[in-house]
Image (spheres, rainbow, N blue to C red):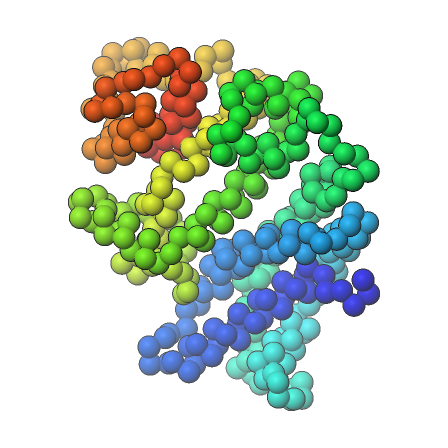
Length: 365
């Protein structure tokens, strides 16, 4: 692996390539494209970070356990030796040579290009810790046996791997009781530290699944969903996040740093079982930290409402938009027909999932 390009070097190369591409974009189209000083802050913390996380697992996928451990350990060590501060000159020269490739040129970087490279490096320095922590987390997952090959220790027939378990939770292929029992096994009877690790692993899994799902939406699907919302007189769902050039969806008001929430726009309850499971883990963790009462969160809210002499109904609790969204969700899940409940005892778990998902999305208070 002597000639292997490790994660920090690969990260620098991707960032520099984007820097060159963006330079050409605003210099060659100067009449229509203006240089955005916040572009790299948004690019590095957004799409580059997501691409980097996916790249880690793509790089180690074909390797055996020995090579995975070697690659991740060397990459983690490289994050200590290849900090942006130590790599300033190498970074500038790499940018300069990439800019002129395939032409050969000396290393006398002109003042403008050096200033531009330092601008990129400044934003890279700000977010460098994100990539370092992601690599350390991958190494930690490998050491815990969550990634890599396990031929020498095959999984018994009556057990399930964490990744497969997460898949079953997401797809609704496992019952509430099975989920409870499996979490109990994974965490040695709900040991606090292991619950926290399981939640961390699931949040990473959930992030990757949501990112993959949103990448599957076509421009046509997005445009159709937007049109349907507008035709129905519904406001478009936004999330607060920096907008960067190249994004599929840009806010109609470029002065606001908002982009459309594709999950809520196209299929807002696609991941409600994941939200339910995440909240289950959070509740178990908080209970063991002594931060929650013996009541479920919903019971606590009910008692507060009564003590304040506030009569809360479906109509005065939710906005019109959120009420319509919730009713549609219940109809689509065959929990109600024509607004009337057809719920059986076996479907109560599904209702709890809806409630937790809508709370997570700030639809229910």
